[in-house]
Length: 232
Ligand SMILES: [Zn+2]
Image (tube, rainbow, N blue to C red):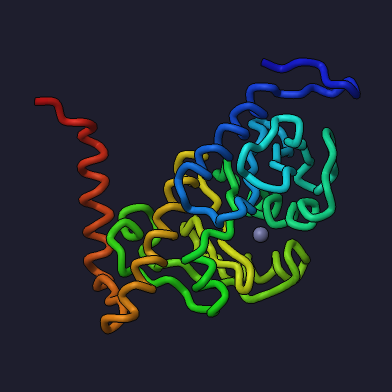
Protein backbone atom coordinates (compact mmCIF):
# COMPACT_ATOMS: atom_id res chain seq x y z
CA UNK A 1 0.00 0.00 0.00
CA UNK A 2 1.30 3.42 -0.88
CA UNK A 3 0.74 6.31 1.51
CA UNK A 4 1.61 9.98 1.33
CA UNK A 5 4.98 10.63 2.95
CA UNK A 6 5.89 13.54 5.20
CA UNK A 7 7.27 15.51 2.30
CA UNK A 8 4.30 14.78 0.10
CA UNK A 9 6.11 12.03 -1.81
CA UNK A 10 4.68 8.57 -2.10
CA UNK A 11 6.16 6.08 0.34
CA UNK A 12 5.65 2.40 -0.33
CA UNK A 13 5.19 0.94 3.13
CA UNK A 14 4.93 -2.59 1.77
CA UNK A 15 8.32 -2.34 0.10
CA UNK A 16 9.86 -0.91 3.29
CA UNK A 17 8.43 -3.77 5.35
CA UNK A 18 9.58 -6.25 2.73
CA UNK A 19 13.11 -4.84 2.86
CA UNK A 20 13.21 -5.08 6.67
CA UNK A 21 12.05 -8.68 6.40
CA UNK A 22 14.74 -9.40 3.79
CA UNK A 23 17.36 -7.97 6.19
CA UNK A 24 16.08 -10.31 8.91
CA UNK A 25 16.28 -13.26 6.57
CA UNK A 26 19.86 -12.38 5.59
CA UNK A 27 20.76 -12.41 9.31
CA UNK A 28 18.88 -15.71 9.77
CA UNK A 29 20.77 -17.25 6.82
CA UNK A 30 23.99 -16.92 8.83
CA UNK A 31 25.88 -15.59 5.79
CA UNK A 32 26.85 -12.40 7.59
CA UNK A 33 29.63 -11.21 9.90
CA UNK A 34 29.13 -11.20 13.68
CA UNK A 35 28.49 -7.45 13.77
CA UNK A 36 25.75 -7.74 11.14
CA UNK A 37 27.36 -5.17 8.85
CA UNK A 38 25.96 -5.04 5.36
CA UNK A 39 23.18 -3.50 3.33
CA UNK A 40 20.32 -4.65 1.16
CA UNK A 41 18.27 -2.78 -1.41
CA UNK A 42 15.14 -3.43 -3.44
CA UNK A 43 14.34 -1.89 -6.79
CA UNK A 44 11.08 0.08 -6.83
CA UNK A 45 9.13 -1.59 -9.65
CA UNK A 46 8.51 0.74 -12.56
CA UNK A 47 10.58 3.58 -11.07
CA UNK A 48 14.20 4.64 -11.36
CA UNK A 49 14.51 4.23 -7.59
CA UNK A 50 15.43 1.81 -4.82
CA UNK A 51 14.80 1.29 -1.12
CA UNK A 52 18.02 0.82 0.88
CA UNK A 53 18.85 -0.22 4.45
CA UNK A 54 20.64 2.78 5.96
CA UNK A 55 20.89 1.32 9.49
CA UNK A 56 24.27 0.52 11.06
CA UNK A 57 23.57 -3.23 11.01
CA UNK A 58 21.18 -5.63 9.31
CA UNK A 59 20.33 -7.03 12.76
CA UNK A 60 17.04 -5.63 14.06
CA UNK A 61 16.96 -3.13 11.23
CA UNK A 62 14.23 -0.55 11.89
CA UNK A 63 11.76 0.40 9.12
CA UNK A 64 12.47 4.04 10.04
CA UNK A 65 16.11 3.56 8.96
CA UNK A 66 15.12 2.53 5.41
CA UNK A 67 15.70 5.25 2.82
CA UNK A 68 14.51 5.74 -0.74
CA UNK A 69 17.02 6.85 -3.35
CA UNK A 70 16.98 7.60 -7.04
CA UNK A 71 19.29 5.40 -9.10
CA UNK A 72 21.30 8.58 -9.73
CA UNK A 73 22.06 8.56 -6.00
CA UNK A 74 19.63 11.34 -5.04
CA UNK A 75 18.18 10.85 -1.54
CA UNK A 76 14.37 11.00 -1.86
CA UNK A 77 13.18 9.95 1.59
CA UNK A 78 14.74 9.35 4.99
CA UNK A 79 18.10 10.02 6.62
CA UNK A 80 21.26 8.57 5.11
CA UNK A 81 24.29 8.39 7.45
CA UNK A 82 27.70 8.93 5.79
CA UNK A 83 28.97 5.38 6.32
CA UNK A 84 25.97 3.91 4.47
CA UNK A 85 25.89 6.74 1.96
CA UNK A 86 29.37 5.76 0.84
CA UNK A 87 28.22 2.42 -0.60
CA UNK A 88 25.04 3.57 -2.35
CA UNK A 89 26.72 3.73 -5.77
CA UNK A 90 27.60 0.03 -5.49
CA UNK A 91 23.87 -0.73 -5.37
CA UNK A 92 22.60 1.77 -7.92
CA UNK A 93 25.22 0.64 -10.46
CA UNK A 94 23.92 -2.93 -10.30
CA UNK A 95 20.35 -1.80 -11.02
CA UNK A 96 21.59 0.40 -13.87
CA UNK A 97 23.68 -2.40 -15.38
CA UNK A 98 21.23 -5.27 -14.92
CA UNK A 99 17.60 -4.38 -15.73
CA UNK A 100 16.41 -7.77 -14.45
CA UNK A 101 17.97 -7.27 -11.00
CA UNK A 102 15.44 -6.57 -8.25
CA UNK A 103 17.62 -6.95 -5.14
CA UNK A 104 21.22 -6.11 -4.25
CA UNK A 105 22.80 -7.61 -1.16
CA UNK A 106 26.13 -6.71 0.40
CA UNK A 107 27.64 -8.42 3.44
CA UNK A 108 30.97 -9.17 5.05
CA UNK A 109 30.13 -12.88 5.43
CA UNK A 110 33.33 -14.20 7.03
CA UNK A 111 34.53 -17.00 4.76
CA UNK A 112 33.73 -15.23 1.51
CA UNK A 113 35.39 -12.12 2.91
CA UNK A 114 38.50 -14.21 3.63
CA UNK A 115 38.72 -14.91 -0.12
CA UNK A 116 38.10 -11.23 -0.84
CA UNK A 117 40.89 -10.24 1.54
CA UNK A 118 43.23 -12.79 -0.03
CA UNK A 119 42.23 -11.55 -3.54
CA UNK A 120 41.37 -15.15 -4.39
CA UNK A 121 38.33 -16.06 -6.50
CA UNK A 122 36.06 -18.84 -5.26
CA UNK A 123 36.21 -21.73 -7.73
CA UNK A 124 33.33 -23.97 -8.73
CA UNK A 125 34.16 -26.68 -6.22
CA UNK A 126 30.72 -26.86 -4.63
CA UNK A 127 27.89 -28.24 -6.73
CA UNK A 128 25.41 -25.59 -5.60
CA UNK A 129 27.47 -22.92 -7.39
CA UNK A 130 26.91 -24.71 -10.71
CA UNK A 131 23.24 -25.30 -9.93
CA UNK A 132 22.50 -21.69 -9.02
CA UNK A 133 24.09 -19.78 -11.87
CA UNK A 134 27.70 -19.47 -10.73
CA UNK A 135 29.44 -22.14 -12.85
CA UNK A 136 32.46 -19.87 -13.14
CA UNK A 137 32.70 -19.51 -9.37
CA UNK A 138 32.88 -16.01 -7.88
CA UNK A 139 35.33 -13.47 -9.33
CA UNK A 140 37.17 -10.78 -7.33
CA UNK A 141 36.77 -7.08 -8.10
CA UNK A 142 40.01 -5.23 -7.40
CA UNK A 143 40.11 -2.89 -4.44
CA UNK A 144 38.84 0.65 -4.57
CA UNK A 145 37.56 2.78 -1.65
CA UNK A 146 34.03 1.53 -0.96
CA UNK A 147 31.41 2.86 -3.33
CA UNK A 148 33.93 5.06 -5.18
CA UNK A 149 33.96 5.42 -8.94
CA UNK A 150 37.07 3.24 -8.93
CA UNK A 151 35.40 0.54 -6.81
CA UNK A 152 32.27 0.52 -9.00
CA UNK A 153 34.44 0.40 -12.14
CA UNK A 154 36.31 -2.58 -10.70
CA UNK A 155 33.02 -4.36 -9.89
CA UNK A 156 31.83 -3.77 -13.46
CA UNK A 157 35.14 -5.04 -14.85
CA UNK A 158 35.08 -8.19 -12.72
CA UNK A 159 31.42 -9.12 -13.20
CA UNK A 160 30.91 -12.16 -15.42
CA UNK A 161 27.75 -11.87 -17.57
CA UNK A 162 24.93 -13.84 -15.96
CA UNK A 163 26.85 -14.51 -12.73
CA UNK A 164 25.05 -12.81 -9.83
CA UNK A 165 27.91 -12.31 -7.35
CA UNK A 166 31.32 -10.74 -7.03
CA UNK A 167 33.86 -10.56 -4.22
CA UNK A 168 35.02 -7.05 -3.28
CA UNK A 169 38.75 -7.10 -2.58
CA UNK A 170 39.61 -6.15 1.02
CA UNK A 171 35.93 -5.61 1.77
CA UNK A 172 33.24 -8.31 1.35
CA UNK A 173 30.68 -9.76 -1.03
CA UNK A 174 28.14 -8.27 -3.43
CA UNK A 175 25.16 -10.29 -4.72
CA UNK A 176 22.64 -8.96 -7.24
CA UNK A 177 19.67 -11.05 -8.33
CA UNK A 178 16.14 -10.96 -9.69
CA UNK A 179 14.47 -11.48 -6.32
CA UNK A 180 15.47 -11.16 -2.64
CA UNK A 181 14.96 -14.92 -2.22
CA UNK A 182 17.52 -15.67 -4.94
CA UNK A 183 19.96 -13.05 -3.63
CA UNK A 184 19.82 -14.52 -0.11
CA UNK A 185 20.19 -18.03 -1.49
CA UNK A 186 23.25 -17.08 -3.56
CA UNK A 187 24.76 -15.22 -0.59
CA UNK A 188 24.47 -18.41 1.47
CA UNK A 189 25.86 -20.62 -1.28
CA UNK A 190 28.86 -18.33 -1.80
CA UNK A 191 29.59 -18.36 1.94
CA UNK A 192 29.22 -22.14 2.11
CA UNK A 193 31.54 -22.60 -0.88
CA UNK A 194 34.13 -20.30 0.70
CA UNK A 195 33.97 -22.19 3.99
CA UNK A 196 34.35 -25.52 2.16
CA UNK A 197 37.26 -24.13 0.17
CA UNK A 198 39.08 -22.98 3.28
CA UNK A 199 38.40 -26.26 5.12
CA UNK A 200 39.59 -28.25 2.09
CA UNK A 201 42.76 -26.18 2.10
CA UNK A 202 44.11 -28.22 5.00
CA UNK A 203 43.58 -31.54 3.22
CA UNK A 204 45.03 -30.89 -0.21
CA UNK A 205 42.85 -28.01 -1.42
CA UNK A 206 39.46 -27.86 -3.14
CA UNK A 207 39.04 -29.57 -6.51
CA UNK A 208 36.86 -27.85 -9.09
CA UNK A 209 34.02 -29.62 -10.92
CA UNK A 210 35.00 -30.33 -14.57
CA UNK A 211 33.54 -27.58 -16.76
CA UNK A 212 31.30 -29.82 -18.86
CA UNK A 213 29.77 -31.33 -15.71
CA UNK A 214 28.91 -27.89 -14.30
CA UNK A 215 26.41 -27.49 -17.15
CA UNK A 216 25.07 -30.97 -16.40
CA UNK A 217 24.58 -30.02 -12.72
CA UNK A 218 22.63 -26.93 -13.77
CA UNK A 219 20.49 -28.85 -16.26
CA UNK A 220 19.68 -31.55 -13.72
CA UNK A 221 18.62 -28.89 -11.23
CA UNK A 222 16.36 -27.35 -13.91
CA UNK A 223 14.74 -30.70 -14.72
CA UNK A 224 13.82 -31.26 -11.06
CA UNK A 225 12.75 -27.62 -10.70
CA UNK A 226 10.35 -27.97 -13.64
CA UNK A 227 8.80 -31.06 -12.08
CA UNK A 228 8.00 -29.22 -8.86
CA UNK A 229 7.58 -30.91 -5.50
CA UNK A 230 6.94 -34.65 -5.68
CA UNK A 231 4.08 -35.99 -3.56
CA UNK A 232 3.82 -39.61 -2.44
ZN1 LIG B 1 30.75 -3.36 3.41
